[in-house]
Image (cartoon, rainbow, N blue to C red; front, top):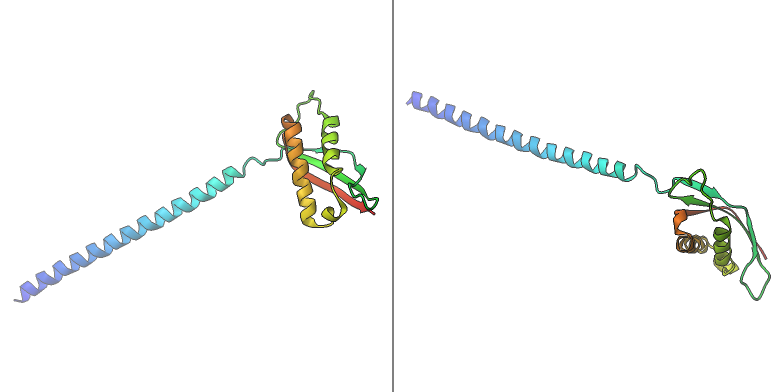
Length: 153
């Protein structure tokens, strides 16, 4: 009887260690999967951000113009730089006249009240960007930066 009890204990001990070994293996597989997912997600983020949208900037001379307000005389003085998605080639001629004309057309439609708020300035940037992308798409304009912004009433 004692021998049977010893054999039974050995079987239970083997079953318990096999169960705990299976639990450890499952835990290792789960942790490994989490690690692979984490490093894969980090790698995807770093490759997505590896090439920035803006490769170069184009500085433009300051714009001074009348705003579209009919009830008052208002002037806008704004400095603009353009963020471009590519570097211009060494012998490439940038169509500055078309760029400035496009920007002046958009700025000339603006009103003082719209430009006094941050959201108004952001909308003006969007309008300038869309107009430049439509008129001179080969330039690759991706961002519009205001380097100075002054309204005089």
